[in-house]
Image (cartoon, rainbow, N blue to C red):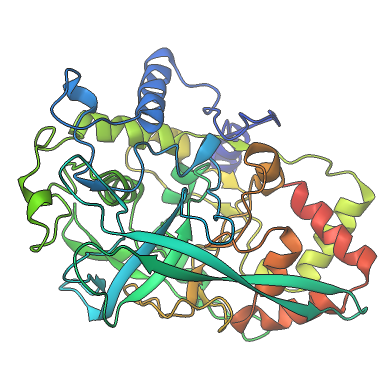
Length: 434
């Protein structure tokens, strides 16, 4: 135990910055070579990729079909993307597609004409797949003391479809998530995930480990990344996003995302095979794995102390677990044996019909979502003002996000709704201290 305590005490994975760059800080203590690698990865994350061929072969290969030209476009300041206003096109939101059933590895079955994601942009000569516009439907939900919360839900309208009809398609709107602390979540041992899933929990809470396909190791593993925990590790999450969002191939996703009917897409020039090479993928992985987490603030404030107690008493910490210990990371020693406070269990939970997208993803059913990590939550509005919360950005304020919870979180939601206004404000003060 003495060795473990020593390792935990040496953690350099948090920082005290609370400005608009609070999601962009590296671990302290990285040596010169590690910092150089971190900044190479940061440059790639912020890089605006260009259409091939170009003079700079290191950053060409955008598309042929894509959503945005950079990672940072959907993760501004490394934070949350934003849902569009009523009737407006998507900017940092995307739309997942699938058909009922599963692919060869148990994952979502892609649409034969459009694949697994709507790519609204195309390089010259390649038509974008179409346009998605969001319309918001609102409802008033009463709380126990007579106050009401206005909840909004997106209805997506598809226009200008370029490759045929989307019969029987399942859709799911998603906004970009914050990218801090991902290396630490990657270092959580798979046995820890299964142990948390097996624990007896109160209020009908269960929790499930998703089982997903590892491209690199050619086997089924525990899922931990993605809104439905549909990626086994950070490298595959990066490769999947580079291909799906930017049309950039990599060693883990070497084939362009053109369907058989998208002939112009298949014939378009590419930026190399692959376009993101192994070194670049490694640099992106190192960067995202070593983004530090903002330290908590105002912990001694009476409202924060009360709110933390109410958060636990309401049952929220059954899923948003306040403390975990990482295992041994296979590549990066700085991530090993760290005591962290992510406020997630990385498990799938049934969140009820209100948040359901009806779309399966490996073992995740249409009502299940992975518990969102809450660390850094209190700085979200400062970093990306107006970005909102939940998987599709529907919640404009924290209270809306809480009241949307249902399913396994229904009892906790009811406890929250029954609190006094002052007690609810205390919970929000606690969340804003994270």
